[in-house]
Length: 140
Image 1 (spheres, one colour):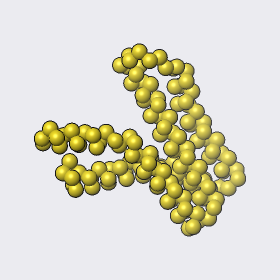
Image 2: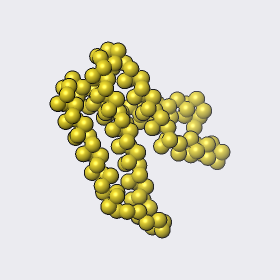
Image 3: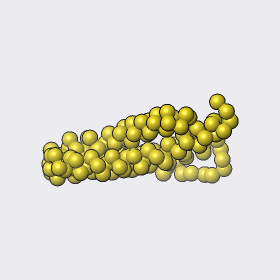
Image 4: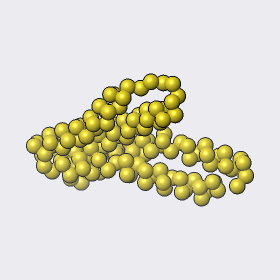
């Protein structure tokens, strides 16, 4: 592998953290519409809520990892450990409250919520497929 190809590959693959949330948003919109057309508005609302929680969860997890890496590498930027811990636990409180609220209002929407919580898996799968496509077509 030449240096130009290696640099192009590194540049492309380093963009995965920007592309995965975009794939997640696209999948959430398309699937929310599909669930609404196929199963009705309640499961679609549950799916949209689960997708929103998943998206926020990914963003918060990304921030937690950045803070932990900064602490390990001691870059000099002080981050609140209490804030990191609170955000970590708030993710699970948010998921639990959403599941409880949906279960009490409409049990059918709970399936949509659980499906929406798997949105990061779909985003990562889309990214993997895109990387394979680009690697084959561009020779990276």
